[in-house]
Amino acid sequence: MMKKKWPTHSILVIAIVATWMKTYVVYHTSFDMKIENIMQQVILFINPLSFLLFIYGLSLFFKSPKARNRYIVITSIILAGVLYANAVFYRFFNDFITIPVLFQTSNFGDLGASAKESIHVMDIFYFTDVFIILIAMKWLKINEKVSLIKPAMRRAYFVLAAAVLFLNLGLSEIERPQLLTRSFDREMLVKNIGPYNYHLYDLYIQSKSHAQRALADGSELVEVNNFVRSNQADPNEEMFGMAEKRNLIVVSMESLQSFVINNDMNGHEVTPFLNSLTKDKDTYYFSNFYHQTGLGKTSDSEFLLENSLYPLGGGAVFFTHGENTFHSMAESLNEEGYFTNVMHPNKKSFWNRDMMYQSLAIQKYYDVNSYEVDEENAVNWGMKDIPFFEQSVAHMKEMPQPFYSRLITLTNHYPFTLDEEDKLIPEYDSNSNTLNKYFQSVRYMDEALKTLFDDLKEQGLYDNSIIVMYGDHYGISENHNVAMEQYLGKEITPYESAKLQRVPLFVHIPNSGQGEEITETAGQIDLRPTILHLLGVETAKDMQLGADVFSEDHEEFVVFRDGGFVTDKLVYTKNACYDNANGTEIDIENCQPYIDRAAQELGYSDKIINGDLLRFYDLKTGNLLLDEAEKLNP
Image (tube, rainbow, N blue to C red; front, side, top):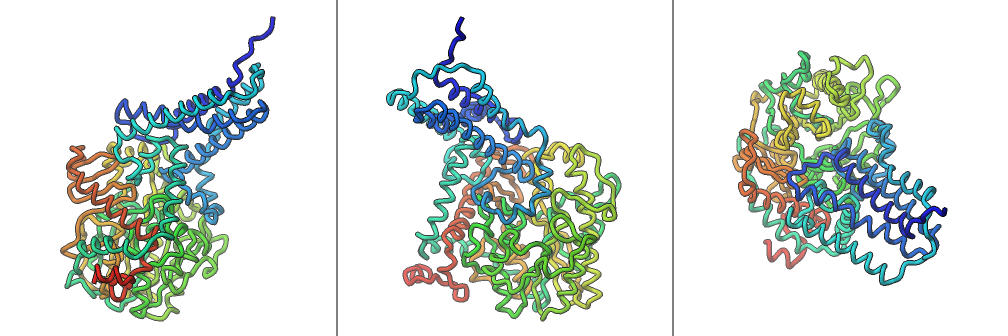
């Protein structure tokens, strides 16, 4: 008796269903996407289907069954790779890959330790559909009498694929209006249109942004300029020039979040030196200060500091727009006679810094070649913080004064590994190896910062300097919420997660006698005007979106790169509005004016970067560089 043959295109159907079901399972096992109702669950279920119908359906144009099967297998491997790459990326960044990130190849070698920590043995699951397809090809007896599907049937097939896509988009528009026009939140995009369509959309957005520069002209800056001028904050007269002509030392504290400040871990003080600064008579400590970085992480925090503009939503500005015209804090200080430099014991090409620092008008970059690195003082990412600070202060001693030195620490970087002699407190005891090691790594960095202050005093640089230290971005992502709930003793809701984006900011002015804790809500975008005003540098003509935190006109409004925000009264995150006083979810209408304002600010910043609009702006006069624009904005 002959074995029954399966229909001609059974392999195609199996491939579509297998990849579809695998993708849906991955949604629930690999990505922490909040599903609030049945509609969202339905959208999540159907959103991979239209793309899979189309991409696998191209096999219908192959006449040979062998070629058709080969195409299906290769496609399934590529799609599995894309989904797996997003899963691994999500484990650390709690976000999805973008096109610019894929081209940041100069970073890949240095990311080895982080990548290794994010790869698990069970990851073979992500290729389950490939194995199913291969098994089906081997064991199923397929009817191959019909070698090529009829054109009419093929058209009907692709009409079905289009119908599924439009159904998906229609439901998404009902659930999330203006989804594709207000795409600051990548999770929202993936949740509604699926990971594969998301990458196509990302490709479109990146292509569009690259075209913007070629088509841009100065007239686009008129509206932005009017917005900046109308929201400008005048400096505080008492604080303006308080540190005039002092050396400026800015320390980027890697991955440091505020939840460790004035806190302990199982009885062990985590940041004893920083804790002492929160009560120091010469230190302003900001306890409601937020990072505003995106996928560029540390490089984004540098960008915010230097330019008071938001980072891009889809990649690091340092990579995508490294040759733009910028009016950085370093450029302003160059004009004031400062020797501007960055100190970071890593390869100069990491985050494209060697190119970007030229665009930021930084005079010298002390990279890894400026330091004596050996087996004893090396760490995964370059050099341990204590010897880094020691050698950096030695460099400062040789610099012309006044100088602006920006120091980027390294040790407290994921995966937070330390040598035994650097472990000053025990590990934590949660289910997260990352959080467990984080406390030890932070404790080491705190000790290194104490060393920095001591060395500056010893070398005679302390008294004539102002020292600004800030956390550059989060260290513990939402993937470790269970462990964080154990440590903090409370549930990590979206509201609490937003509040955990607070990072410490210290402004230390030796011998000023004017230190206090400041609870006003502020963010990294406010650093540039704040620091320049303390140094007595006017910024009234600068194209910046932040404001001096000491100004009476400073608005308590911090915008996150995904369109969320925090004010003194409200928190908006994950498409929900919360009362900032108690974390209670309230009607979203309370947040709507600020939602629109956040989108406006992010849009203006993106327009400046994507169009390279500052090439049309004269920083000295505050005028646009086109006759027509100057008439509109005299």
